[in-house]
Image (cartoon, rainbow, N blue to C red; front, side, top):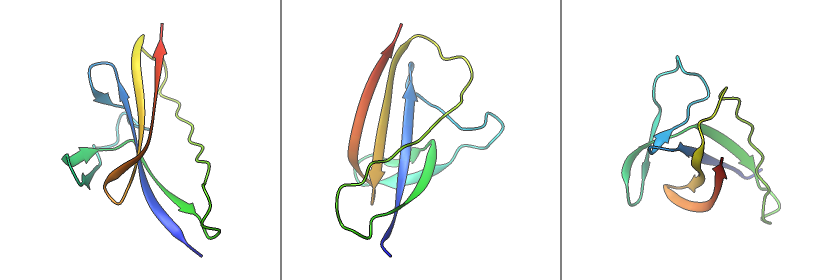
Length: 88
């Protein structure tokens, strides 16, 4: 089996990284270009086929403030996916 560790970073308005639990301490990983970075979740993906893998992640942060949210996915310290959403 080919399992890969990825880091999910969800950034809220004000460049604040969302956490899955407000009482949980901040978690960090090392990126190739940004040094130490906070992350929202660490996932292990099974990619034994070697094909593109769809990643699904759910977050229940309570009430979200309006503004721009960005989801970034890192593998081996490099961004491999990014998406943004504007909440109004």
